[in-house]
Image (cartoon, rainbow, N blue to C red; front, top):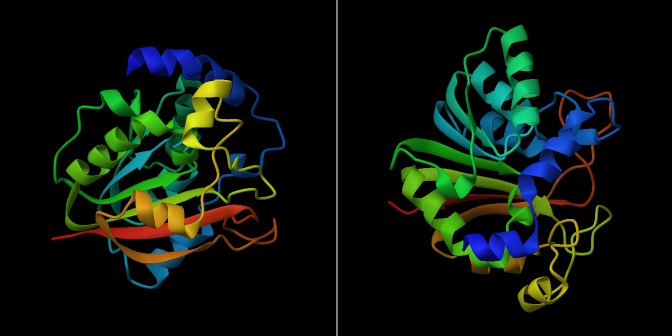
Length: 224
């Protein structure tokens, strides 16, 4: 697996460089939670507990969850993003366990989490790692726990490549991130019960939540 990972790219160098300039006009650099995540709490789907966030970046969703009485373990490959996330959490006096690690080398707590959340990580996961990703989510969650994800819409305004899995390895690239459809997500995560799949709402930049066109949101539940 590591050989195939290396064949595609060196992810850590890429993401540390990406997060090193905090002044870039990147919408998700703003310290705002995803609008879909906020909606899950507002509707009572999520009511506190233990959270594992995969690919937390500069911590905006981890901070929101910690501020709403969740116990959060937040993982990212980029040391630069976690430095930024920790600074933000410290300013709010929030306790979050930030973990600098490759997702596939995590020493997870099995059946420990009420929620596994992924905002924009999955579309950067190569096809040969999907089975490992699914096992990670399933092993982490309690029976009846939730798994929620945001990812690129296929051929959407943010990109979302529609190339086949085979083509990924021919061109040696995920082309900035793979795109997905509702049917694709249902097929990939067929071991979970699908609660909702919809497009992210595009919200005004003055609002207190993050929402842009070109993102698909989904929430699934682990079968008891």
